[in-house]
Length: 311
Image 1 (cartoon, one colour):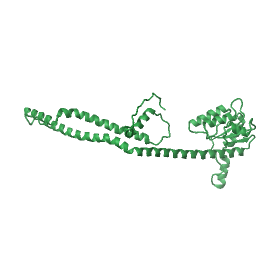
Image 2 (cartoon, one colour):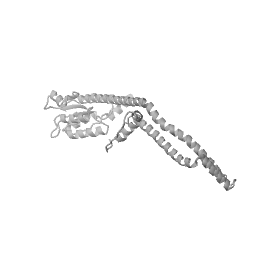
Image 3 (tube, helix red, strand yellow):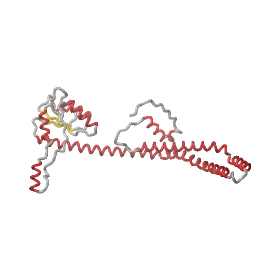
Image 4 (tube, one colour):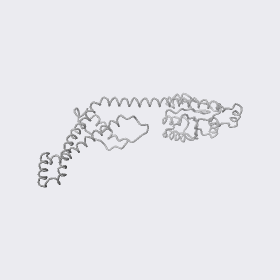
């Protein structure tokens, strides 16, 4: 409720913030042995402002905290600050879903001029002072229900859009599936080959270790000769160096597979309801990694990123 007259605030408190008559409730219960079905506390949360600037800040705070106002009753003349039309237009620029009801004894503009000033927004109402309590009650009920229905529709629409967006992303991933599978199969293929080679190397190392364990059973000169021949047979100097290379190559392949899976997971995840910081450069890298097999034989990708902040 936005009005520079404190008495109007008090009137709205009496109309919209009605209190339960406990004595009447008790009397009804004693007569009929059941609660009074007509007695109820107000379901409204009402806040008040004497000037438009203050009201705008209240709407802004509520909107940013995701608990927006549904309805604003606004006086038209409120000197010395913004008038009601200015206040309403600024509020609607911030929250276009807010319902507006002007309450005024007079206006400097005609109804047509008010519509033009409000940028042709026709869905506001005008009630003349002095008003009846029933007018305020019925208006509050109707406009709050209208806002609630709009809110539910917007929620359903947002959920549907999220589902369609996710389905579109999954369809895109389906088209890339063969290429991505190829990108994953390459490292998986050489990891598998490396593991087979490492298996043979380990068997050779175990044979060499077994020979060293025979030092108490065989004379030292004979054992040394056997070890020398065995090392020559398995090409020990080569496999000693190659085993490190194979392990490093396999680790690189696992990292590539892990990176592709992470990028796919990040690309296909459904949208979160909360905001979070995002690195555009990493996002582009992630996308390029997913489509790399589509690009590498067709185009050369040159990346020249700027040092941009998170968004």
